[in-house]
Length: 106
Image (cartoon, rainbow, N blue to C red; front, side, top):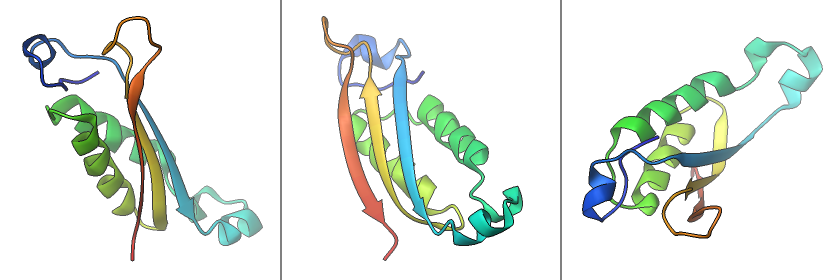
């Protein structure tokens, strides 16, 4: 849930957001050791994304997606991310509308 959108009612009432982050990381060590300490902490990342989405009050899903991608790329071990943000209540008679972006650490 978060305040997002350009219309007056969207600036007042939080909307449901679907956030999907697919992070590119080297999984070789984690696969070999089968130890969680060698993995990206996905729960920590998800909590950061959720917290930001709930408090950012962005006007557009494009801006929010960029913010969230940046947060993913700040996570140790994450080389790139494909990130999708969808608003489930934005347009009547649709399941959701949104954007998908790809960003990488260069």
